Structures are given as C-alpha cells and as structure tokens.
Image 1 (cartoon, rainbow, N blue to C red):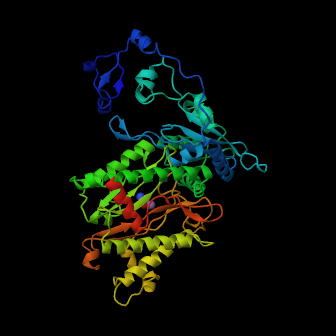
Image 2: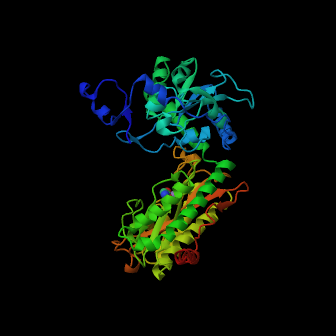
Image 3: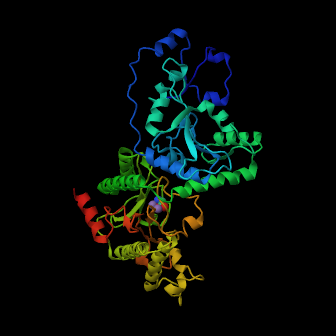
Length: 524
Ligand code: GLY
Ligand code: MN
Ligand code: MN
C-alpha cells in the first residue's frame, strides 16, 4: 500500500519530480460526488471522553519540577516527527523521551506534537512559594472531520490511512493538559519573546523543524543565537535528563511491568531453544521468540536483542544474531521489553543451551555472579555512590582473573585495580551500571556529578551487569576458557528506606536455578 497524490491533471501531462514519484503509486478520484460519497455514511463517534491517563498527575508533578528550574522562561519539548525508513515508509513512531516523560503519554502519541511550558511569571519576577511557575499547553493536530479532504487524502494524518485520531477534547481529557492547534504554535512561541521579555529553550534534538522555528523566533526577538542558543538549550536537555534520575512510584511500577514481560519473553526464548538448535540461524529463532512476546505484551523492544551463542557472546554489541546455536555452548541473551508507557527493562542471562553448564562455563559464570553480588552488597551500604557499585564488581573480576593466572607476571589484582593497572579490563571492558527508564541508557545528558559521582538515592533504577568475555582467539587465557562469554544483568531500584532491590528477582540467576529454568522449559 502506498501513499497517493491528488491531481485532476492526467499523469502523462505533468512531469514529476523524483520526490513525487516515490509518493505517487495510486491516484484518488477528485470529483465532488466522490468527495461527498467518501465523507458521508459513517457511524457516530463515541460520545464519551476518555478517562484521565494514570500517569497524568505524575507527569504534572514532573512538569512543575522542571518549570521550577526555569521560572519566566518558555520551555519547548517536541514529541518529534515520524522518521522516514525509505521513500514513503516511516518507522513506527516513538516520541522523544523528554516529551513522553513530561506529557505522560506513551505509545504512538503523537508525531509532530509539541509540549510548551508557558511561564506564568514575568522574567525575573519572584515566584510565590508553592505557586506554579508554568502552564502546560499541548500543541498538536486534532483529527479533521470526515468531510474534509484530510480524512481520506492525507496519508500522514488522514483517518482512512492511519486509523482513528483523537480530538482536542479527548487529548485534553486524557492528559489533563490544555490543548491548542499546532498551527498556532509559531505565534505562541513568538509572543512577548525578547531580550527584556520571554526567553525560549527547546529540546533541540527532538525535532529539527521545531528547533528551526524556535531559532527564528529567537533571532527575530534579538535573543541568543548560534552557540549561545545551543548552550541555553543544553541547559534544558540536561535538566530534563536529570529530572529522570529519580523515578516516581508510577515509573517504578512501569519498570516492574517491563521486567515481568521480559521474564515472559525469556521463557518463550528458552522454549524455542530446541527449534533454534535445529535451525541454520538459530540465534534469529531466539531473537524472534523474544520479539514476539515484546510486541504482544508491550510496545516492543527497548533496544535490539542480543542473542549471542558461543563466541558471539564476546562481541559486546552482537545484534546480527545470524549464527547457529550449538549443543554444549552458552547463549548470552540481552533483551528488554518496552511497555506501552515506553519504559524498558534491560536484562541479560547467559544460558546453557542443553540446560547444563560445563565445569569451565560454570566457573566463569560463578565469577560473574560473585561480581554481581558484590556490586549489590556495596549498593546497599550507606553513602554508596553510583561509581562504587562498579568498583565493587571490578574488585571481584580482578581477583578471579588473578586466581586463574591471567594477569601479566608479577601483577596482582590490587595492582590491576590501581591507577597504573586495568589489565583485568581486557576481559570486561564495559561499565557495570547505567540508569534505566524511558531510555535503556537513561539520563544520558545528566551531569557527571549528578549521575556517576552521585550517591544512590531512593527512586533510582539502574542495572548491575558485570561480565567476563574470553574470545576464541584470546591466547592469554587457557584453551578451556576460550569462546566463553558470560554477562549477568539485573535491574535494581533504590527503595524509600535506601534498600537496593532487584526488579529482576523473578528471573533465575544462580547457576543451579538457571539450569533448572532451562531444563524445565525445554522438557515441557
Ligand atoms: N542492552 C544494553 C546494555 O546492557 O547496556
Ligand atoms: Mn544494560
Ligand atoms: Mn543489556
């Protein structure tokens, strides 16, 4: 099915640009009788307004917190446009995470929408204690009437093409945010803008058209432009990212749902192992099994699944998944379901294909598990900083590779952990933890002192994911370890009392439990 062009001029008479050709496989009738016919004879629309989104009060509190950082300024948060895959085919839409966080919307809402936090006070005017600093306005294109040409003739917004679209009233009811037509955005952004008036900041990466519009407004109003404007915008991106470092209770629930759906996906993936071992590209069988569950239970994948059998596990970002799955090997699976609210899990389990670890596989597995346990134990000590979690895992990894005689002659684990060392990192080059939320690597624009160097506080959700990777061609390790790659990745939350707990408690982790999990599901 392709998109269409309307024209009353026969195609042969009208030379087409290249862009038109890719967008012009079908033609629609243009006569008035057709327009009347296609625009009539449809049943009534539901008269009830939708219920308020469960996320709405939480999103309102997040907007208040962000607004308080920028009193008197206009903050522009675009959802972003559809992204072209090729010609007239788009990728499935996913709004920018800052928009989703602050509008409280999830799946499929709403290409080209823009959330604006409109200042309620003049620049520099003090804000009374507890008083709101901004009013939120959601600019979007409400559905057109069925008698409009848009209804049948606009492949991007027409309901005959993209399905039922919401009205302004429906969006207002669902989000609790005042709605305005997207066509009024330009004027709204320009209102009172100026060096002595309202300043603007935009999440610049979200939608280049909106950023260009904000730039135009700033230029016309004599506000910062170029590099200075970028710095202003970076301040908003940073604040929006840091706002997500601490999840509210609603977000933690969504992350738990994502983890639970991910566990179900791993179950399906394990059930598909017998088919995978009989398939020339068994890794794809595993990937597909997880992916089906991700689409059934959620919006989809939070990131591309890694299904890495044997030595492929030693390629950290193995997403080709085009290898065979062989008896006797391990398969490292790193996968996460993104639920409809767009929060994602990020879980890795390393699974013996036959349901039974060999001795060397178990030895490596246990070392990684010990590192994970040390990291969790450290996280539970008062005053633990984000980076201390990594250091605790690294201490175990360094110790094990020393015990196994892998460090250079005369180098101890302590040396390796020191500033001139780092040798153990040959076998675990990545970090142990990252924040998790709407993005798999969440809060990426937060300042270092707010993230890596910060103390853990209630509401933080992050991963613990040590690994050991012995490539098949690694001549520094004994032959029996070559080709073994293990990562164990859990998602944890800091509870109100400071306790750091697994969201992934239900996903088997101990070696014996993993064996029982695999054997049980394969035997079914
Ligand atoms: N799945 C990406 C990561 O673990 O960071
Ligand atoms: Mn991760
Ligand atoms: Mn992962």
